[in-house]
Image (cartoon, rainbow, N blue to C red):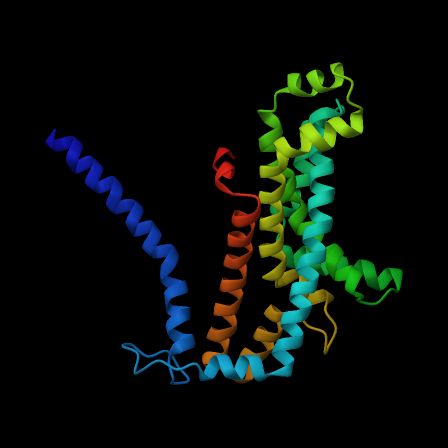
Amino acid sequence: MLSLKIGRFLYLAANWAVLAFLLLPIAIIFVFALNPTPYIEFPPVGISLKWFDKFFASSQFMSALALSLEVAALTTIAATVLGASAALGIARGNVPGSRFITAIMLSPLMLPAILTGLALFQTYVLMDVGRPLWGLVVGHCLVTVPYVVRTTLAVLHNFDLRLEEAARNLGASPQRTFFEVTLPLIKPGVIAGGIFAFIVSFDQFPVSLFLVTPGQETLPITLFNYLKYDLDGTIGAASVVSILLAALVVIGLDRTVGLRSYVKL
């Protein structure tokens, strides 16, 4: 009994240590953003919102934030549709070499994103299309589609095909079967992938570094350029805004469609 209690204590201690390790950088960012001094100071000398005022008063930061949200929204829509369609094709299409195709679909996760950005930049140069907004969205889709494919395949792996067969036997058309049976059942995986796509796109730096144009930069690139010349709490404020936006996306989806079923993934 004593050894069981000691083992449980060590297990809980290890979990709390990992959790603290993961949350410590976020806590430091919050302290940096709320500290009135232009540098991180422990213990904090007070609480101030002046860095948030500076962030929201900056037209450069606001335009970068708006562009990041626009690109992330477009990327999420495109990556969710493409990734879910690809997953359905792999799982249901009886395509020869499906395992190889799956590996190819997931390969952008194994390739350094900075190389992906460089390759796309060279491709756009050869095509003589410049660096348009759609090119940035394509780049973000390339690194986010694998998340949707993986989460959707996880749901399809345990999908009961008899439910679709029952709907077809009752006279439902293939389209109606998909929208009323298949899609609701795979929705947890699709939406989970969409959440990953939004967060990864919004915080994407390596790919955006090669594909943005001067004056039209995403928030991570703007923060990087700001750090070249200054380092104050504005960086912390921008980081807190990014964290809160990601949290709001997750909470909003939890309120609308529910995320508790995602634990099955």
